[in-house]
Amino acid sequence: MCAAARTPDRMHADDHLNGQVNEDPYRPYDPFDPHDRLHERLQDDEPVIDTGLVRRLIAVQFPHWKGLPLAPAGPPATDNAIFRLGPELAVRLPRAAWAAGNLAREQYWLPRLARHLPVPVPAPVGRGRPTVGYPWEWSVLRWLDGTNPVLGSLGNPVQLAHDLGGFVAALRAVPPGPDAPAASRGGTLAGRDAATRAAVGRLRGVIDTGTATALWDKALRLPDYAGPAVWVHGDLSPGNLLIHGQRLSAVLDFGLLGTGDPAVDLIAAWNLLPATARPAFRAALAVDDATWERGRAWALSLALVQLPYYRTTNPPVAANARHVVREILTDRSV
Image (cartoon, rainbow, N blue to C red):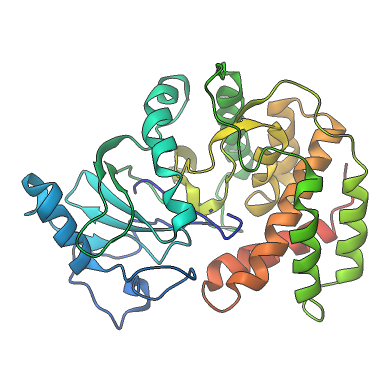
């Protein structure tokens, strides 16, 4: 598998990059195959992105790679279109202007963070320019092998919880430095209030909006994070994780990377881990009650926004969002 993707407020499940969806990763592009419909727009200002466009971009800007096999990598992602280029590379093209703005952050920071992390992360090897019908910068990255973890089908969820906790702890431990950017998802819950309430309004008749509103109201009364800003990934969803042999093998899509409240990286407790594995994840990070509850509120807010936005355009993301809402509305643990 490769390097990565994201969601409307922002992947970020955000993005699904399973390079092993197809038995033959280099089979011809089929516009009638739902896994290949990368030309279907998921974002309002999205250009047409298909293998023809990517071949032209590679030929013009990286001609030494133009003879390599090219194929879509997995089902359409929410923020970025991903293609596999030969056996070792991936091409990642933002689907919208706001996603394109994250490329420079990844290109600059990932090489600096990678050596501190316990699993591989995307390694940029090329930075494409807007040209030949594509309006934004784009990336060529090293391909990372693995598969996305499947919600409800984890062979060893407690081990995965430990692995995820180790990754988050290692990322937090890297000193940010004065030039580290603020994370777009590292601020206060109050900053998400309007979007969350608007999403609840669109979900009447779909979820228990009364309970969702009550939980959100309670979350807004939590104390804001008062500690030092730490590095956060910002989008630890199943589509941005790779596993091999039931162990975490890579973390993808650092488009939301920045510094802020560490609670946002707890969202994996609800979008991937079963209830039985959440205590292991929490223990690995020594999370206090207030931080845990803020993390749950982040997971709820993101899922509430994603569910109506992707209900028809990206059913896998909508299904994960529905799962998160259901888990949190029935989760009474602190």
